[in-house]
Length: 64
Image 1 (cartoon, helix red, strand yellow):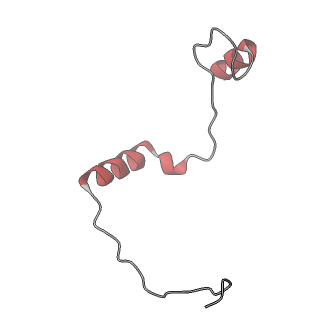
Image 2 (cartoon, rainbow, N blue to C red; image 1 turned 90 degrees about the horizontal axis):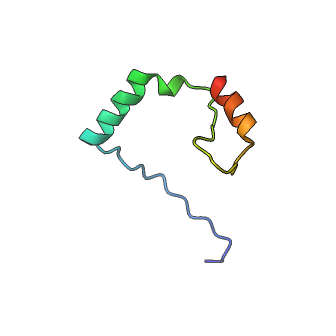
Image 3 (cartoon, rainbow, N blue to C red; image 1 turned 135 degrees about the vertical axis):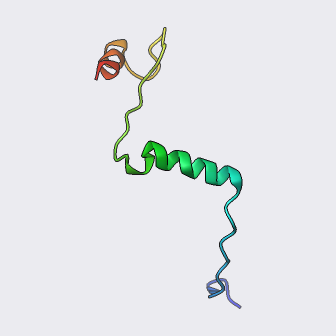
């Protein structure tokens, strides 16, 4: 085989049964409607020294 050879497999790996923890997390995501979220905003919190944005911008974000 050369270095440019591509090996493909049509073998599909069966899906494993969801663990109790995974199912609980899935239920929380569904209950909170997290799958429907289209946008999010990151906000600097409790900064005494501005590390990610100005204090003014941070406060404007929190007010929004």
